[in-house]
Image (cartoon, rainbow, N blue to C red; front, side, top):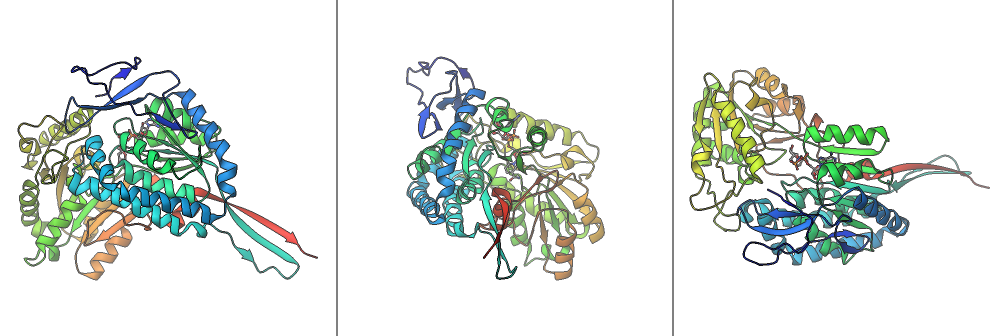
Length: 503
Ligand code: NAD
């Protein structure tokens, strides 16, 4: 999808200049040191080049680290009220431009404006306000050690943080890192995903008006190049990575060798567990709406917390699967910018092909039933990576489509008989990011929630994270928590103990 460009004068076939978006380093908008560029195409409109961005390299990582280090002493020394004020100004500026950011998100990621992109840009504003509000909570304690002693702790910033971002909801993920890291007094380098960097550059353009130069830097380019250069850079104190488990392992090994601080938000294969009472005539509608939401069909299933394993009690299995299929089929696929669209485009040809490969693998399993074939739902006349909701029934939890993160609109339905069996199946996964439980029986709900090995369990609802909640993975879904205040304290500060003898 992306082509490397060495020549800054390249033009599109029609002769129109391709807009250029530069990186932010030390308060200046710069090209890469090598002069190379990559083109960014809109996934929902194949062939439409939105812009070209610098193809950053190790040299650019060096420049960004130098800028972030130079800005650190001044930023960390401020009274927290000054950082708070800057974050609140950024929130206001983002709010004023929220619609513009949402439209750019739809173009950049293929996510539908109404169902995904707009809520995402609004969530970003809320995250800046939240962390601005708690900026004074990055504080220490005093031990009652007697009148001749002052024994206190300071929560000091870690230093320079490198935030590595994925493409599936870039603003949201940046919002989970940026305001918390900055409120705690760190300086930051964001590495935008190569497939969707434009909203991150726009966020930086808005935010940098309210920050001293070098406090926020953004680099673009490939993970193996500028990304890895940041992870291995001795001037980066913390790596905050969100992405796939495979790349996360690699990043952890590199950061671990030099004992850098590290948080990993990785992949998932989360269970949606349906008890019989949730399929009663007066409940099934709400349950199925929630299952669709949890599955993140309207983000083309491209969500780490997608409830992509539907575990349903055998007594209501057929009824629930039929209702899921009926509602999923009614979702409207279309151009991401169209207000009527529920579900936009998959991010890239590579991702689209990977999803189709999983579908082919699922179809080849003995006894499987393709209850809804999403490839048949692609809208006519639109050239993008469109694929509708796909539902497999009669799935075995041991199959690849039930074990691996597909990161596409593919839901697999598996029946169970007892609560023990459902919990065992839910936990029979190397992932442990999220889970959804559907029942009003408090014992079933809480016993299941407590025994599931996941960092986040929702009962009778399927929506996304809310500002201030704890968020992060068990097992191969990650290490660390950054989203909540407690998570941010742990993830973006370190404690220094100071003991003073008085008198
Ligand atoms: P990815 O792992 O391919 O890439 C993520 C980021 O890492 C990109 O910016 C990429 O350029 C960079 N990268 C790649 N190789 C690197 C290297 N060697 N060194 C440093 N950086 C490198 O993931 P993706 O395809 O962009 O995103 C999808 C994945 O992200 C899914 O697995 C999804 O579950 C996960 N994800 C997790 C969360 C979460 O909060 N747990 C949120 C969103 C996405």
